[in-house]
Length: 394
Image (cartoon, rainbow, N blue to C red; front, top):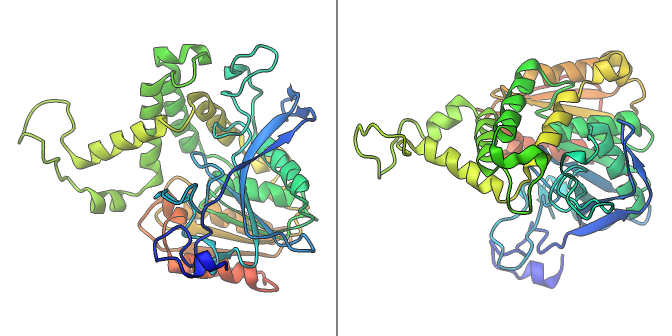
């Protein structure tokens, strides 16, 4: 810990337990990259952040994989007056569950994203215009292979662990499958081995909201333009799947906005939950690209380990990593049984795997929220020398 961290007031970017101010960096791969589809990019960029220091043996790295609407900024702040830390700041930092005094933590915006990494909003060098929907179709495997090239660039010889929730959990599992000797631990939370019909249906409604917006224009739109109404609706609908009925009821109930006029028969915002969802939609369109949303949700739909490898047991056959799968009781997007199936398939394949189920009423997003039980689980998994293959729950 530096002097500035040790003497900083609580709540400042340098307070104890915080990684402080971080600067994103770009990894530019100059070599052609072939996607699973067979399409080729002449090169690509991944925007990433790192926290902590890579050890002399280069084997203390932990890769954080983000979910659909996440990005590379998972801890710290971007300036001294920045009041919005990274999306997993509660988990990552000195003395936290993912302890940056011990681990070198890496997080990258996925290939196909829109926060600095190559994606549909990137410029096509052949045309000088944004790729739009001419960008190659992206799969989870493409995302993982691109991140492996980043880790090679950073000099990481072995991953101590890879951690992710939701879509990030899918990537974490693929790391263990595709790079078995490289990946020592896998921690996948609130995830699934394949998208269910219901999850695909939700994604399709979101895509249609975008594509039916006339401003989508077949994916051709300028910077700051595009299907803002459609993207906001897609986000509003998706956000409902990330929370639970109990958490929504506790937070909003049927409370009305103070501006609501009694039993006024209008379509203006009357209930607090309506205002909340509209805020979520408006905030999202200011930071996310509609075409990236189409690409990433389609990558989610196509994710199916059993289909790709013949069976779940066959998928996990190469895995050498110790694995911990965590489900949450109130998650109805990727419910506990889907997480449990992953751990059971790993055990049937003879792998070292554990399953934990946390009782929460916060829904799918439970893996992002503050939970001392979850922190203890993660810390123990990352720091113990050996994991036995058991099934346990909290």
